[in-house]
Image 1 (cartoon, rainbow, N blue to C red):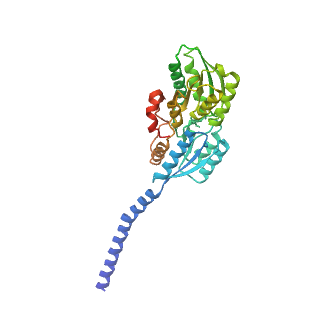
Image 2: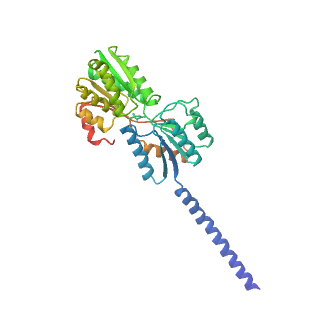
Image 3: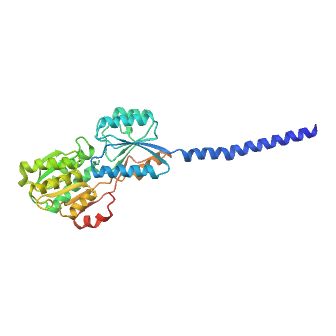
Length: 330
Ligand code: AHR
């Protein structure tokens, strides 16, 4: 009887010890394992592929999704349509992603779908372009540039190049109508121009941020009044590249007869400056993948993030552009 009691006691002790070991070791391993395995799922709605800048942004985000072991990326290309972006956001909500990243094609019309994301408790990170909403809590943060400053810099550097007291007829190639990049660059440029009374914007039309439309619109400007155009302000480098082609085909020397200033800082713009066909490019950083990953991790860890994570940028012209060309990343 005594022996049976001792054996019973021993089995009990072994059982309790085994249970404790399972709870301690097994339990933490399981939860740690779970934490390690659980990737942060980011659903990214991209605008499309209208420019070299946009392609560089897509590449940066996709590389982040591929190389960062903590991130899983779901990518959706909206082909320039807001309705496609709204569909993509709804699909991300249905898939219960952890973060929605949105590069909004236009500024307005986002309230309804972003309220749905808010109700689902999914943070929305705006990438590169802003939105206009009456309730700022509909997005968590904006990662991107100061477009107004870019427009101001374009005017400032142009005036420095030609001379602030000169009479200068400018034509403007606008980006996509309703996009914050278009609205704010236009605003900043016009604001800065007030300092140079001889500088006038003679014509301003959209060319949708594309090279082909940049060429088309510039051809029309040249046809209408080619002899009286002194400078082009293009809201992005791709449109400027199209304009350069139109100017050369028209028989004028781009960069000399007609000065060129544009925004983005893609390699082609640096090459055009080197070739003497363009004059100034105002940098706008598309390599936002690493910042998006960092924000997603901070949100996972319950940290507070700034409402605007501002890109650091520069302006390039002349020798500075030529020297920087070999190391350009996009
Ligand atoms: O939103 C950024 C702008 O969009 C870039 O300047 C332009 O090239 C792109 O298409």
